[in-house]
Length: 105
Image (cartoon, rainbow, N blue to C red; front, side, top):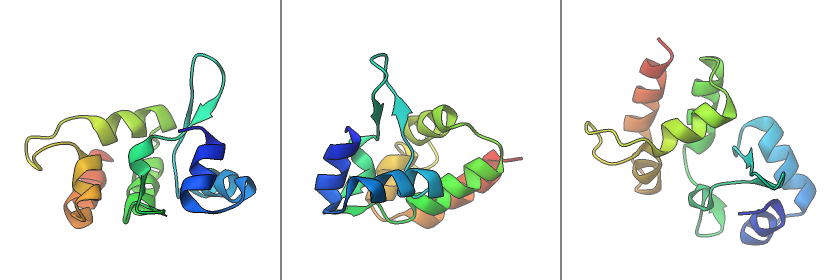
């Protein structure tokens, strides 16, 4: 989703979305066209997916780049099962945070 789309989905000003990106509430990447986007799965029912911020913080503390964080969130994990992002969207944040902590070591 483009940043204006995220702002609309969250019902906030675009400046708040920029702040969320700076603060690690959301993670975004620039596409080939240079436009910064946030994975649509990061927003659910008009809010940022629960526990996403904690997971982003844990991975950033482990020196993951934003690209690596997005890759990690969408990489299949047989122990969950599924992807960490799917587990977050299913409110299984504790399991995902444990794996994010382990990923830093």
